[in-house]
Length: 516
Image 1 (cartoon, rainbow, N blue to C red):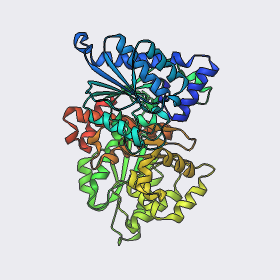
Image 2 (cartoon, rainbow, N blue to C red; image 1 turned 120 degrees about the vertical axis):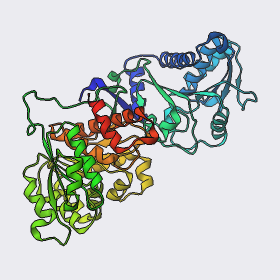
Image 3 (cartoon, helix red, strand yellow; image 1 turned 180 degrees about the horizontal axis):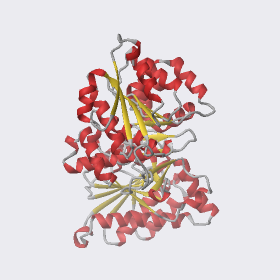
Image 4 (spheres, rainbow, N blue to C red; image 1 turned 90 degrees about the vertical axis):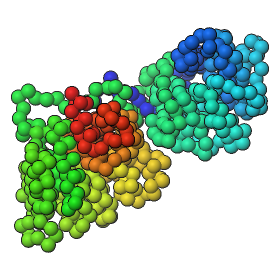
């Protein structure tokens, strides 16, 4: 994967260690970093209020805590004041508890004749700088802190948050009771996970990552576990052999589509082909023959009868005849959870060796068979064929036997835990889809939009990932690239019309645009 197209997503502890290494290891003074952070924040305000005459009359309030985030805020206020802004300062907390750097900033302001208030102001403000907590918060704001957050949110002012909106977890994006809703967040050095994960991402507004002198050398070789693709990066795609043919570009056997669910097989198989794979064979019920031949004439079909069919017409029998043809197997979209589907998934998991993408009902069937799941985990401890699971939060909750709330509260931890346990690549689909591998690496997606929360969207994703896998991409790379590509297609579909009328079919069509 081209690292030039990616950026790190750090936790609070990773960022603090990097910050400390820059100060103590490389000798960059903390006040220098603070001044550069303040310059970045002030510069963003100047950009958002470019008309000099009007801007200089804007009333501005700095709401600062006692930690270094507050020191950043005080320095921002000083810079704005020196450019003619009318600035008031509100310290939340006891001055005696301020960090040395924040106390220094307060002393500097004192020499400029500025007063630091310790109570909620009476006036109205056009601009508020939120510098209360920063990335170190681990509990809900209470008392005067909660009142300050509420004051900011009720103000109607333009709000800039310093590093992260106060009240948002830097690690998970969780909101601790209450949190500032910012118009823009200026974060320093590296993007924080909580600015990408929801609900934190919804509180951050427009996010700007400012380089202040902390570089990846300060990780001392211990690089962050999580990353994302830079916005606007080209989708990472497998190399095309100019001398290749439909066989060399990969053959996918797709088990999908029960009675009344042919659409899932259509969307997934079409996505396999549109992502570049050479051939796809759909294993589905006989009742879907005409629908599939009409909608996806490029696909080959292996069809089975209902659960009362003769042995030579069962899903398991037909699958065994087709299985040796495939380079990659994908299973689950619209498959159903009946006895026949359960037998088919058990067969696929226990009797095949090709790389496997398991989705939707395939995951539900595995989750319901705990004995099979435990056996699979034990067998995969020392390796096994590439395996990618692509659940949405509900399916992941069933697989892990966690509550939906636990999954949504920290999808990164859940995915990392179960990716290691199953020795597989594991996704959690959502507004910010997470992908994790057994080695502890994690991808958090930023492409896509709310219009993609529509029936069939996940079937398209399954097909894309299977198609990339069939072309020789490594499982984790195929999963990350597939999720990113899927989101880009959703964005292209929304741009053609709006997020309100994105459909899975439109996402599929938009793949043409983003692949080009």
